[in-house]
Image 1: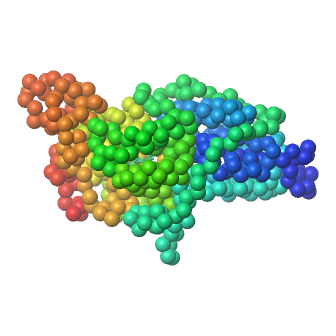
Image 2: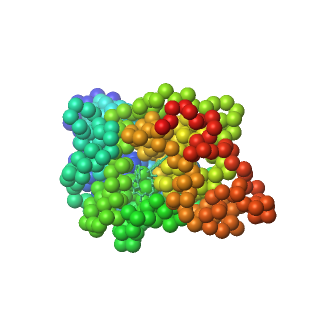
Image 3: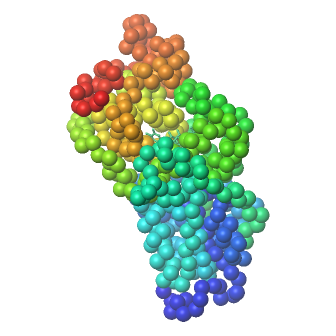
Length: 473
Ligand code: FAD
């Protein structure tokens, strides 16, 4: 800390007011309260993104998310340039870099969106202290990453809602701001240097069919979803082959789309499909408020059931077959292969694949959650870990013994087998629902299925033999 800095009030030496906006999970220009506040209070603003090695070390930097992030940063830079500004990219520890940029820009104020994870909460606290020691102020803005901030809607005497339906009821009564327009102009101080913003092609190991990122893509997707998709959402959201969900999750994850705007525009559209869609977006806020109140549930059971998960060579071999999409249960394998090919999986696929690992194979949910986080472009601690816990029965599900039988799920949600044929090429020649039970095919038909494996386990009621009689309902 320089004595000169500490002894004079924050503000630039040349009299120009300046502020820094730290972008994190909010990579957009529309409906961005921190940017709006910074522009209202300062003549020049540094839009900053920090590539922090601690994020990579914590396992958050999977190739699919890095590639999508590259798109988002390039688009953000482009959007800022169209407004006379640019994005400043720095590499290093977030706290040190923000302080360095604030010093270089002689900025009195730093604005950031409130985060929900333990990682984000710790970072915010360290940043507040470091900036204060330097005579600067940190402003933390709510309702940027979620529609309703964690902690806003709580039951009496508790830090968070543990059950979704009462949370949803209260969440719906919360007023949401009118979405803010994107700024017309952003003036960035010339002296602040930036690292090069690498294109997506610089990232290796990316899923071949990964979607494109960036705010313009997100806005087009939301527009066309509200015009053409959402109406049928209530009826078709579970149709695996129909692929009739919004696919907005990576955009909500990276914040190229504001959840407030998505909810407001869906409500304005109205109808049962839009209502069902808003309810799903509420699940996202629900998990964020559970995580914000209990950061430990990223790794620890929310409600432990004293599971003695299978371990050892057989469990490891089953898990590897699951990861590779080679369990011999076609609908599970289709879902796991979609994940690998697209870095995204249909929600019904996530449910049945996670149930297969935790309930059928009785493998620890943390192992499955880790694999999903390695591949999911929308993978985040709140939604991934807490959905895994919901499925595994250690989370907020009020029916923790629920088991999703892969065959019943396949017949119900992929009745013609189109989803399986799309993702499991060995079975592409098997017509209709027969594709779900390749072990019933005639030897001649079976010979046409190439190397497709036999089932890793035999099932009764969705459970493998070793799993039965272990306290399930
Ligand atoms: P839509 O059906 O169009 O729903 C709209 C939005 O609502 C989604 O974009 C998403 O933001 C939110 N949403 C929908 N369902 C859920 C849900 N169950 N929980 C929380 N938010 C929801 N979602 C993630 O965003 N990141 C994850 O890491 C993640 N991991 C999951 C792991 C498992 C085991 C399961 C069962 C679900 C997981 N989900 C996760 C939730 C859900 O599967 C995805 O959000 C959804 O499939 C994304 O597709 P979509 O955008 O087309 O969703």
